[in-house]
Amino acid sequence: MANKRQISYGATGTDVTDLQKKLNQNGYTLEEDGIYGSNTQEAVKDYQKKQGLAQDGIVGAQTWEALKNGASSAGIIKPTSTTSTGTTQTA
Image 1 (cartoon, rainbow, N blue to C red):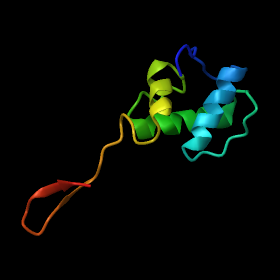
Image 2 (image 1 turned 180 degrees about the vertical axis):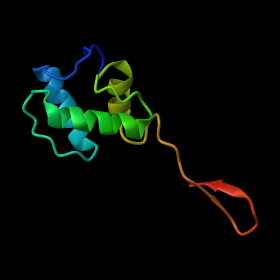
Image 3 (image 1 turned 90 degrees about the vertical axis):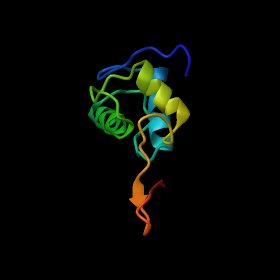
């Protein structure tokens, strides 16, 4: 993901297609048409929310990095549970 430019609503081109592919790899179902339209923007904001990032729809360095690392990367907080002995465990 190195050298990816910041992109947002209205952008077009290969960076947008790459973005759409990465989002689809993370469970979204976007048309990979290279056009940053409303569906792509909604997916980006949802992804940013799930990653604990600013939900601005702008794909900058942090969003690219999260996409590069996949869904198990930054911003994912593992749920905890309390055992019958009262200790807390991370899932």
